[in-house]
Each structure stands twice: as C-alpha cells, then as structure tokens.
Image (cartoon, rainbow, N blue to C red; front, top):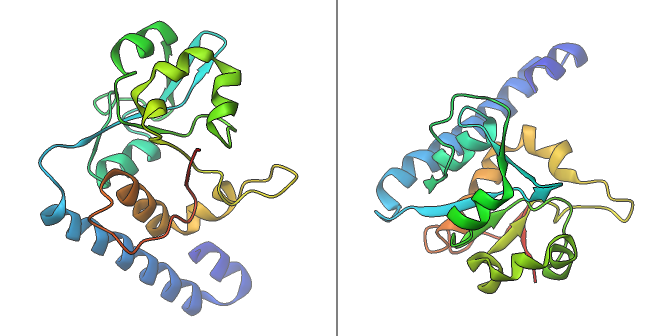
Length: 182
C-alpha cells in the first residue's frame, strides 16, 4: 500500500490506510490473547495432488495467519517459508481426524472434493462440514479475489480464520474470503 502511495503521489493516504489495517489486525491479535479457548482448533490445509500433499511451511505467511488466529497446525515448527511435500498416506493416517480443513484447491463444494478423491468422505472435517475454501469471491471465469485483495486486507483474512476456528469469539462476523463447502 505504501509503495503504491509513493508511485501515485498519495503517500499520506496510503500511509493512513496501511496504519488503519495494521491497527485492525494487531487489535484483533491482542483481543484473541484473552478470548481464545485453551484447546486450539486443529487445522488441515491443502489436498492430495498426484500422491503428494503440500502443507504450508512453518515460516510461511499461511502459518503466521494460523498462529495469529490461535490454531494448531501440524507443520507450525517447520522452518521453511514455502510448501512442505508430504505423503497423502501420512495425511490420511495422522490428520484426517481434524475438525477443520482449509484451502482444498479450487473446490467449491463437497462433491468437488469427492471427485478429487473419494476417501475424503472419511475425513472428520468432511463429515461435519468443517471444510472451508478461500474462493468465496470468485468470478465465473475462475478469478479469485483472495489472491488480489487479501495481501492488502490481512485483517479480513484473520477475522475469517478466527470465525471459522472459534465462531463465538466473532459472532457478528460474516465470512469475506472464505466459505463453508456444502
């Protein structure tokens, strides 16, 4: 945001917008310190792609969102910033019991998931409709606003994740980037 302000000659406006977003994000992080339950939501991310499941590394921006939202994530201690390839069999064995599953590719509903792999019906998140994807704001051509707007709206991503993990903490929140797969 600040760079765009420099490029457009509107640095003061850009700085103000950046500071407002930062304040909202950090304010929510501060609020969460006292409002999250002791037991953290266990979160699975990604999906099986040709026998490999790619999980975000522990130093990735996704892992930071999860930590800030108070979630437990299997690769939070990993030292990489990119994706960690793991075997799908390990995911089925170790993480299929997780209650929340995020970002299963381009899937828009639970049937899309089953078309990728029928074994997904055995996942706890699938059975309990705890599968969410960040493609709520997509256009008919498949363009996904998450990739366009979320870098400038991290407070909205964090609020979505908190609502997904702990709805009682933000009961009035309406999902912005994410939606529950039905």
